[in-house]
Image (cartoon, rainbow, N blue to C red; front, side, top):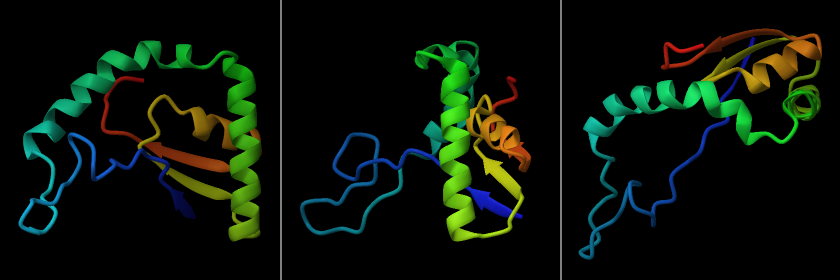
Length: 111
């Protein structure tokens, strides 16, 4: 089984990301309290998330094809995928449509 995590990485120079002080301090982690609020944010977003795609079915198909090409190039013969932070399953569904055995996990309890 291979695991793929496609997640946004905060830009260190932007608000909310790790930053370095003027005195050259090491990068500080984000506010730990922020993590506990994120599930609520995604729980509210889940019912609307599919609306960001102009054509949901075409997007699932395209993402599945593109990810399948990456998996085949990097891990030839692999057919099992763990989708960490799968959200509403856009990539997981696309890979399943390509014949992969996919397990998804997400912090949000909404489906």
